Image (cartoon, rainbow, N blue to C red; front, side, top):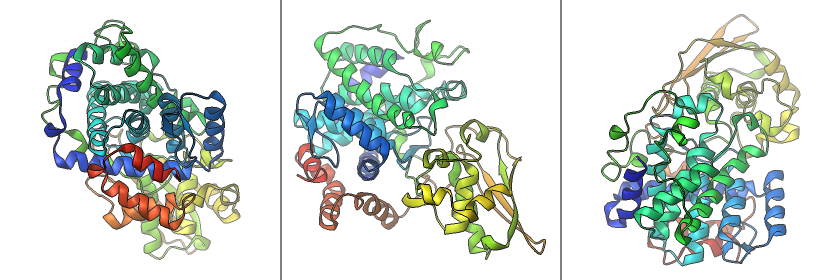
Length: 454
């Protein structure tokens, strides 16, 4: 398996990558930059920027929204952490979790430092995406259930592959980069709802940068790290035997990113497993339900939801992003879940707290099948109002999924909303125009300079 990946990474060329895959990569990088700009204003964003500045580093890659330069590895760490700070970044339906927050920061940082073009950045994104998904496919469910955060673990390998492609490493060097990244990979889901969850994303991007540069310098690692007896798959949560001869055979032949289980763009800044329930709540508002009439709310869930949506009475905005109760209450009360929905004032709103107190979970759906459009969990919301009448809504595939995508207008509106938290209206429009034409951009550095206010 490790050999198959290294052959793919070292051999694939931009001309081998179909346009629809490059288009999805452009969406991923654009979405990442928007949410990273907004995430720079969060407390975790501020702290990671201060940390990056205090650590110093050769000035080769920009910090998004800050204008400062640091080393590519440190830039990937800081930008990736800011990109995941709001939990508003994109997702993958295939089992990777949040691809852009480990791929884009590593690619942009290294791309800026080596003078890569926009097209090269997009191609590197596709390469890293496909590698992360290939490794994840046979082991994701057991890996995730055991408590690993796949954005960080598979993300470290995907980022290493992306940077290795940018650096034009040969097959042996790619194998070493993957081997190094596999030992650097970590991330525990117990830290969901804290600042350490977004740190996982930044660390994955930084791991990829470190692994690829060390491999280029001649640093060694095990050459079969994925499938080895004490390797990545076996140690990190897969006890069953895997027929590795059948895994990854489509690498470079088909591209998952552009298909029905590819990239998904989040319409709400909360855990993806809350999104079908938010859709239900918004549906109920369309049916005429008003919060002041509600006396009871039944949340239809699956057994898997309790592993992720662990904050039933959230006290902070970060906890609120992993609270099914809060996200449904907020959507019912406000008609949407937005950037400002997780402020301290919003969390403590009396009407929202009243709605939460009237909620109960009912497990009515089976375990979702990961790697499918329905894999983020069907949900239902049933409300009872004062006169005893019940209203019901159900959603199986959330908005933003490849089979239920946002419109171009909605996608651009999300970018503008996020980027405008820091950038001027003129800078927002200029940066969106640059990102829309990223494939034609001469240098990644030009794009990063505009986004960083230079």
